[in-house]
Length: 130
Image (cartoon, rainbow, N blue to C red):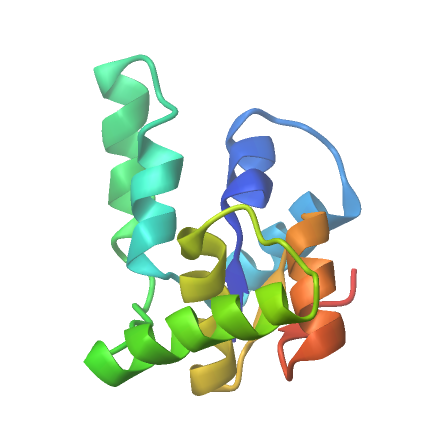
């Protein structure tokens, strides 16, 4: 199973072509994509029309959900602090929550985001090869 980051979902819904979008299509075809709840929020907030919002919601809520318990959220905060201590500034807590969820579940993250590449260099986060 892979978790797909918001930017890849946005590209997929907007019909953009990229290796990440191709990999997402494969994952959906093989029922191999999981969802972190905060990614659902990020993806859905980008839709302008109610119709597109509902279509995307219907697809996303069918995916298996991966989430953290309270200790997992504390681990995400530790991850943020540890990276900051190494001089790596992650843009937000959400990226650390997504990364920590993937680490805890032992799944790969599909993303082209440079923040996640930096996190992966300093943790056990595995990025999905495209």
